[in-house]
View (cartoon, rainbow, N blue to C red):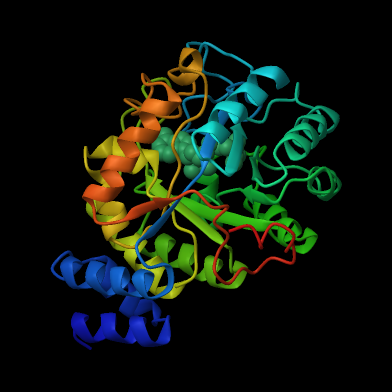
Length: 357
Ligand code: SAH
């Protein structure tokens, strides 16, 4: 089959054979056509709307030692910080004023934030901002912990599977971490009723096209509401410091493929995409993404949440970031919507925030 026919098949059937995926992912000759098809699909469901999520990076302490990540436990050069509950609430306050209706609390796996501490923070945000969605992204926890965060008022959870292939997973992580556990966490989150986000890095060390196809197959099984992907970007204080960054074009191609496979998904144009190319996020939107996640963390700690090098948006206040993104989104031909922004057809059982306009 010709690549143009493969794109048409993906558009109509939302699926391809492994060899068709391989053909599509390994050529850049049809990117324009692919992006167009994906943008058409996103516009048929979401119009030109782009949802915003306020990202609060509240701790860079981490007990894990992922080989690719700048805040890994063994990076002695990382200057560590933690935000207090009051700091976090101040970020939410500022975010609310700027029109944010979703807060994403992300951090390393920091034992200091016990379940009780997390639940206390979440309940306080829930009671102060009842019309907002609360998203957690704090890694692998037990099902009981996830249940307690949910009961405290959390609606969504982001946990990228990173790579669906077992042997590739083991090349990116020490033995203390397992691909099975990460996947189990995602199914547990879904069972509890969270709107779940997963995803992977593009161009992580040792990644093959076959690995990427496994990622797509895993997502087909999981059926997440959100799918976050971004290029791998090197960090000098990790064991992977000598590897190259992931490719812009392959990331964009995958965004389009994901949009055609999962027409209703919430797909962010990520900070990592904006870091490898000055117009990366705009290009991501044009390739099918429909979410942006500006930073609401205090400027004083922004540089310290350094997962990878040269991360963008570490210098501006939240309001400046918000304004800058507004311009970028409209320059790409879309517009920011300040609603809670659930997926138009969510997989989740948790319906209680769905009505907010
Ligand atoms: N501790 C949380 C949050 C991790 S940081 C968790 O385990 O889910 C969020 C994401 O950043 C990770 O899931 C990973 O996909 C991405 N990331 C980490 N290091 C990166 C790097 N060097 N380049 C690009 N993305 C990276």
